[in-house]
Image 1: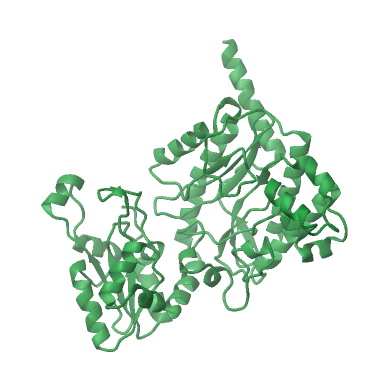
Image 2 (image 1 turned 180 degrees about the vertical axis):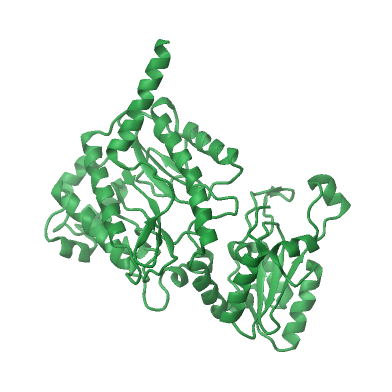
Length: 475
């Protein structure tokens, strides 16, 4: 297992104890989840908050952090000889504890007794939201309550403290995200090079998965790689690739310590973009670059989102797809026919960082409330930006036939949308471009190496690859 130094985990736990003095904190790790029978499980991924404070990516672990005593204890299960036959030698509990600097290690079988003792002493047990079914059952049994009562007992104080701490990325974490982005660049370049020479979406997915595996890491989330870019979370990869289409690739690698990257590029199947594709692509790229210029501390991300929306609306107006006053159109949400999602989200150990702790807690806090307007209600991050925040910027323009039909039938925003013109783009699909940024003390930094996104960069790569293949063919 690839861990930080013990001092990193000690510092993180000390910060948490300082935020919640005189508190008894339980951090629950994840379990294996059966796929179709007990011994055939889904790919295991440790809970990210457990990774943050406890480091270990092993199943069925837990940790107690007692800020009254200043002690941390790791709970796990020693392997039996039967386990070792199948898995080989593994670190002992004592060795695991030493790697993260805890004060003691104990068998997981003793945890229920420890929790009962705390309850009998009238100490409140602080725990985070539990999303795994097995975890809900275990915790309810340990606490002696129903699952419904257990869920109602989630600690808001602990949730806020963890969100505040994990939101500000440490230097070690930024390095991990940048390491993941180096691999993601290799994956995206593979798509840019090979789209013209590949028959199906599945072929491309196989190529990028091979790259991640060759680096000994996993992907951060199921890849979106599709010629139907207007389907936002399209995980089907069965289409053939044909000239005139575009391939939208939204995927990223995890680092060896499980930090995510999240990059989207849209490339043509042909060697070059068509004129219509270039026009829409340029608007999306302008929106990304405009948004990036507005990134700095204390700026609400909501304002950054709206700046991207204005750029998109103005660009579509210039093409005759929208009309009227841009500010009025934005206020009515007319642009959301084309820009149907939020501009970005937090990024870290989770690709939608800490979403398991509640998206409102992470992206909105106490000072912002989610809009009910279509499109804007999907904005995952609205709060003021702070140094150390890491997030995505991912504007897009999509032509979704079912949505166009519904809005047109309702005559929705017809003062601002030229539906007759929109009909000509009905089969266009969609374009999204996405990069990852960190807020610095006086601005923002684009993370990772340059992953080509300019039109001329992408077309240059395609032309050079075609030229190379032609030279090989002639040899």
